[in-house]
Length: 154
Image (cartoon, rainbow, N blue to C red):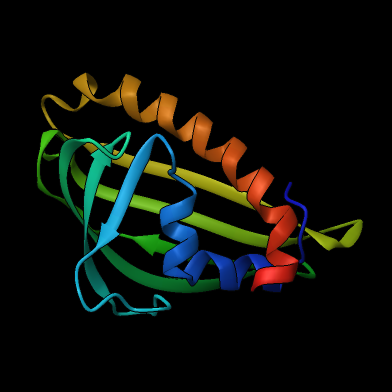
């Protein structure tokens, strides 16, 4: 659960500044020029990644497709990223599918549920799984912390 409304979280999820900030300071993400302000369905953008802002980690494509599902009375919006590595160690992962889902919290309209899943495969993908799992845990904490200010910034 995060501390902002679902509409605010959805807008933040599509803001390139937010996308980059949820990985900081562990991973610095810089978008290729021109950097879009907002990601939209059909966008395919490339980012350069650096660990701790120093060590190049490679380039990653973010390929965005949005979907909406209704589950009972709740609308769940999902951003799908089916991009993948362009260079660097993440090339070990194939069939990249990152899903970020946002839904209003059932008991509190000022809060949202944010669900993150990542699916990937590849013969050597297990080599990067521990690093991705660790970074995902830190990313989750960062999203929860940043979401408190999204009501003011988005």
